[in-house]
Image 1 (tube, one colour):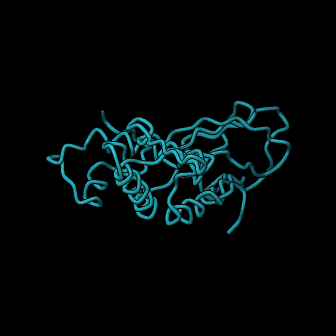
Image 2 (cartoon, helix red, strand yellow; image 1 turned 135 degrees about the horizontal axis):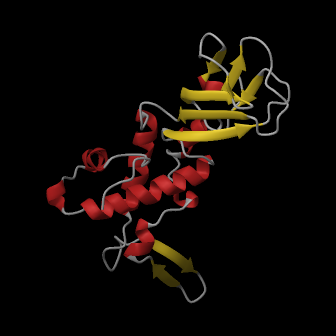
Length: 203
């Protein structure tokens, strides 16, 4: 398989972090774990931080600003109000990338419902950021070290009970899956920094 563009780390980065190489024979397993960790990470953040193109429609409400749903803003490719081009960035409007705000230099947007059209490119750049990639590598390493490939201590424990003690080990498929609650403690503070980013909030 090949990793999706919005994966939180790369195969080569994870290999280096774990002290592995393609010759080790774990490429497919690592890619599955990277995708699982990335999916769980996006769920925890509540948005996809990877750069991508977006189209948004907003109510102008006779205001001079709109708060976009996707941020940080890397580029506004087109902006119109009630079908008319707003003009040029830097001359007719300004963009506040980290806040996700587009502000007119003069006048206001119309009251037309969903009259403001914005075609933009937004996300974290460069991708992936070094700290997010490091956090993903740590998460993958934790999963790799607890993978369910054997029949004993090297397998991830799925459940335990005390009375008439019993233990259930995770299958390899379960071990490659990822959930927010299996996030290592060292990873959460990094994700929290990106989770707390809110559009419209001035730092």
